Image (cartoon, rainbow, N blue to C red; front, top):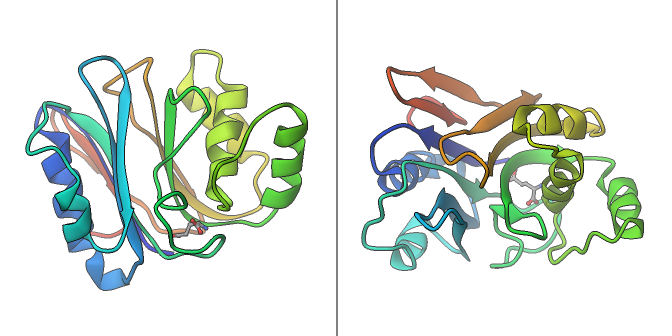
Length: 195
Ligand code: GLU
């Protein structure tokens, strides 16, 4: 169980996300990644096995995104690898998810989703969350996250973004740490105070 950071506001998100992940390094991790909005209305994901410095090496020099999520992973389901690193996308790449914890009933949920045509590219329990939020998404991200997490057993902290609103960040937690920082014109989520 490792680190989550999320930001929505007016400042450059990539810098805040990567600095936040660096501040969570003490928790130990095997991979790191971020997702943020591109000005094209798409979500861009950068992720890699290794350390935050390895992530920085594949990030843009700068970008003007002001909302995003970041993750440091301590693999529980699926080996440490680029594809298993977070964030994870739904099929259409319109929803991105970071997750700390373990979704205990992920195999049963994965089988259900696969039977409905959802395709998985990673070995993680977390990818179930991305597809499950997608399955329930009908224009209201918070509602979809409520419905998806109602299906989960286990421990989770999740940060979720969707291309339909490039300033919205939805977070939820159960038995995994996650704190919320409410500011003026900007809000944060993080696994721990240093971030
Ligand atoms: N269970 C998830 C995975 O293996 C999240 C692990 C974590 O908390 O970092 O990818």
